[in-house]
Length: 172
Picture 1 (cartoon, rainbow, N blue to C red):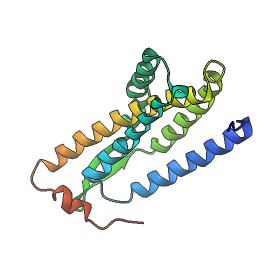
Picture 2 (cartoon, rainbow, N blue to C red):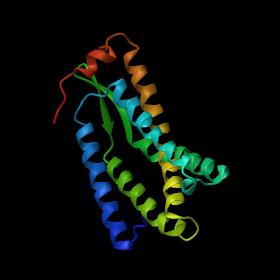
Picture 3 (cartoon, rainbow, N blue to C red):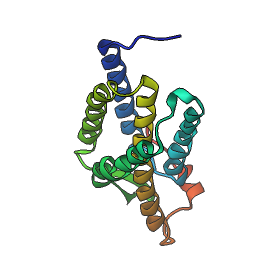
Picture 4 (cartoon, one colour):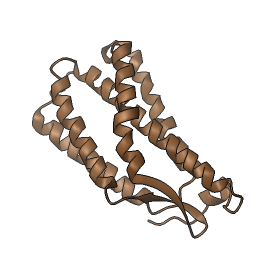
């Protein structure tokens, strides 16, 4: 089944996705950060590599590597600068700068407008694969930084264990 992609449908779906990400980030920022919350998103996202089983999603290795590295080096950088972990009331919390949400919005806009460019050269499935690899590189590097910060904060012995901090009461 071939579903047509019009600019209006693409824009609406992109805005809904952006709103979902922003709401999720606000909610996540209200609860304690745990090892599980740091590690699970990239592990869950890694299941997306199954898309490359389908020939329609395959891209040349060099393109895939380039997309992953651009995500890990270029697009992860603003996230690394605008988020960090800190201790608060005996648990570890995410500390975001006021620019964090602006960074998320700018990244979404870059993705939206770049998609229009790539659609001229790649199929819709290949474009999705390229952007998946870019996003995976970005998320993986960001989460690795958070993991290292979490480990540094918990290695002092004064913090609760990962299991205890996962049971800490969370906000809405």
